[in-house]
Image 1 (tube, rainbow, N blue to C red):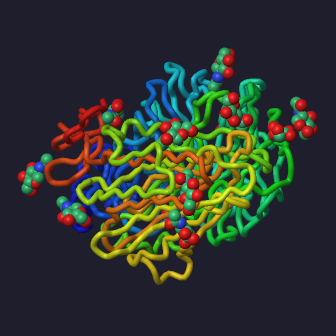
Image 2: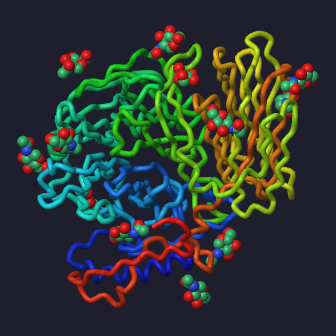
Length: 573
Ligand SMILES: *[C@@H]1O[C@H](CO)[C@@H](O)[C@H](O)[C@H]1NC(C)=O
Ligand SMILES: *[C@@H]1O[C@H](CO)[C@@H](O)[C@H](O)[C@H]1NC(C)=O
Ligand SMILES: *[C@@H]1O[C@H](CO)[C@@H](O)[C@H](O)[C@H]1NC(C)=O
Ligand SMILES: *[C@@H]1O[C@H](CO)[C@@H](O)[C@H](O)[C@H]1NC(C)=O
Ligand SMILES: *[C@@H]1O[C@H](CO)[C@@H](O)[C@H](O)[C@H]1NC(C)=O
Ligand SMILES: *[C@@H]1O[C@H](CO)[C@@H](O)[C@H](O)[C@H]1NC(C)=O
Ligand SMILES: *[C@@H]1O[C@H](CO)[C@@H](O)[C@H](O)[C@H]1NC(C)=O
Ligand SMILES: *[C@@H]1O[C@H](CO)[C@@H](O)[C@H](O)[C@H]1NC(C)=O
Ligand SMILES: *[C@@H]1O[C@H](CO)[C@@H](O)[C@H](O)[C@H]1NC(C)=O
Ligand SMILES: *[C@@H]1O[C@H](CO)[C@@H](O)[C@H](O)[C@H]1NC(C)=O
Ligand SMILES: *[C@@H]1O[C@H](CO)[C@@H](O)[C@H](O)[C@H]1NC(C)=O
Ligand SMILES: *[C@@H]1O[C@H](CO)[C@@H](O)[C@H](O)[C@H]1NC(C)=O
C-alpha cells in the first residue's frame, strides 16, 4: 500500500511540476501538490469519527479557523513520506460538522530539505489590515514557524482562496530573534485595541511572548508570561483564548501551554491558567498549575480562530504522546500514525472545592449518531448493561452514565465499564468510586497490541467531586477503535488515551454495585456511524478533494477544474 501510494505520488507530482513551473513550491518530488494523498481508513486501528491523516505521520493541529461559510479548516504537522516525525509540512482537511473531514491537498511545503514548516495559526484578515487583500474580505494569513538548523523564525503564507492554497509572503520572516527555540505563533484579533495579538513560546526559557501588530507584518513585543505552573523541559504551542464562565455574563481569558518533555505522567501534556488580558498583558487569577487532561494522549491543542469570546470555544488536540508516538503499531500495520482528539466544546466552570476548571466535552455528536441507543436503562440501580457490538462495523461506541440523588454522607458504590475483545479477551476498563474523594481509574494494560513499551503507561486515575447541591455524578465516553476519551462530571475532568488491541474491542459491560438505596442510575450506549465510510470508494479508498480534468497539464496558465469526489457521501456538501 505504501509503495502504491508513493508511485501515485510521483506521477501526480510530475504533472504538477509542469503546471506550476513558474513558482516551484516544493522540493521533494515524492510529495504531491494540488491533490490530496489517498487514504485507507478501513484498518481495525483507524479511528472512524476522529481525524487522522490519509497516510504516514501527523502531529500538532495547526492554523485552525472557521471560514465565513461555516467550514472548519484543520491544518496539521505532517510528514507525508514516512510514518515517523520529520519533513514537516502542513497537511489540510476541512469539515462542516467536525466529524466528517475532507482531505485537501497539502497546504504548506518546506522550501528545501533543511527546512521544516513547524506549528502556527491562521487568521482571516477581513479588514485587509495587511494590505495584501485589496479585493476581498476572506483573505487568510497563516503564521508559522520556519525551522532551519540555525533559527526558528516566524513566517507568513497568504491564501486568496479561503485557505485551500497558499503562497509564502515575499518579505519573510516577519519575526525572528535568532533563536532555535522560539516557535508556534498563535494569533488572534483583539478588538478593543484593534490589534492582532500573538502568543509564542520561548521554549527553553519557559516563557510565552506576547506580541502585537496592526497589520500582521510588523510585530511589537508587549510582555512575557513566564515561569507559571509546570515547567517540564520545554514549553510549546501556547494558546490564549477568551471564553465564557458558566452561569456568568463575564468572559475570562485562558492561557494554555503545552509541555514536552517532562509532563507529570511522562512526555507531553497541556497546562492552562485562567486570567485576564488587557491587550498587552495576561494576568493569571492565581499561580495554580492546572492540567487539561488526566490521560497521556492529549497535546498541542489549538482553538479555532473566528469564534466570538462570549461563546463556548472549540478545540482539537493531538491525541498522542512524544514518548511513544513514533513506535505505535498503526505504522507497520496500517501505514499511518496519530489521530486528533475529538473536537471539544470548552468553557470555564466553578467546580466543587477546586474552583476554576476548563470544561471539555465532545462537540455535538449528532452528525454521527443516526440510530437509537444499542442499550439504555434509566432505572439501572445496582445492575449491568451488556452490549455486544460485534455486528457494528464502525466499532465506535458512545456511552453516558448519570447517577443522581447521591447522599451527602456515607455515599457508597462503584460504577465500572469494560470493553472487551470477543476474540482475544483483551480489555480496556475504568470505573468510578462514589465515596470519599470519588476516585476514578482507567486501565489500558490488558491489551496486547503494544504492551512492551516502557513509556506506554497503562493506568491512570483522578478524583472528581460531585456537586453536593445537585448530588449528581455524570460520566460519558467515546471508544473509537484505537482511541478512548472519557468525560467526568460534565467535562470538569477528561482523559484521552490511545489503545492498541490485537483484535477489535466489540463487547461493552457497564456495571454498578453497592449504591445507596434511592440512588438513581441512568445509562445509555450508542453505536456511532463511521464518518470516513461516507467518503470511501468501492475499493476502500478515501481520495479527498481531488483535482480532475487536469489531463496532461500544459503550463501554469491552465486553471485546473476541481471536482469533489466523495464516494457515497450521504449528508454533506
Ligand atoms: C486497506 O486496509 C485494510 C486493512 O489494513 C486492508 O485489508 C485492505 O487491503 C486495504 N485496502 C487497500 C485498497 O489497500
Ligand atoms: C534552504 O533554505 C534556507 C532558507 O530557508 C537557506 O538558508 C539554505 O541555504 C537552504 N539550504 C539548502 C540545502 O539549500
Ligand atoms: C474589522 O473592522 C471592524 C470595524 O472597524 C472592527 O470592529 C473589527 O474589530 C475589525 N476586525 C478585524 C478582524 O480586523
Ligand atoms: C513592516 O514590515 C515590512 C516587511 O514585512 C517592511 O517592509 C516594513 O518596513 C515594516 N514597517 C515598519 C514600520 O517596520
Ligand atoms: C495591562 O496590564 C499591565 C500589567 O498589569 C499594566 O502594566 C498595563 O498598564 C495594562 N495596560 C492597560 C492598557 O491597561
Ligand atoms: C449553573 O446553573 C445551572 C442552572 O441553574 C446549575 O444547574 C449549575 O449547577 C450551575 N453551574 C455552576 C458551575 O454553578
Ligand atoms: C466558586 O464558588 C464558591 C462557592 O460558591 C465561591 O466561594 C467562589 O467565589 C466561586 N469562585 C469563582 C471563581 O467563581
Ligand atoms: C469496579 O472495579 C473496582 C476495582 O477493580 C472493584 O473494586 C469494584 O468492585 C468494581 N465494581 C463493579 C460494579 O464491578
Ligand atoms: C444496591 O444494593 C444494596 C445492597 O447491596 C442495596 O442496599 C441498595 O439499596 C441497592 N441500591 C440501589 C440503588 O438499588
Ligand atoms: C445524562 O445527563 C445529561 C444532562 O446532564 C443528559 O443530557 C443526558 O441525556 C443524560 N443521559 C442519560 C443516559 O440519562
Ligand atoms: C477500483 O479498482 C479497480 C481495479 O483497480 C479500478 O478499475 C476502478 O477504477 C477503481 N475504482 C475507483 C472508484 O477508483
Ligand atoms: C475543494 O477545493 C476547492 C478549492 O480548491 C474548494 O473551493 C472546494 O470547496 C473544496 N471542496 C470540498 C468539498 O472541500
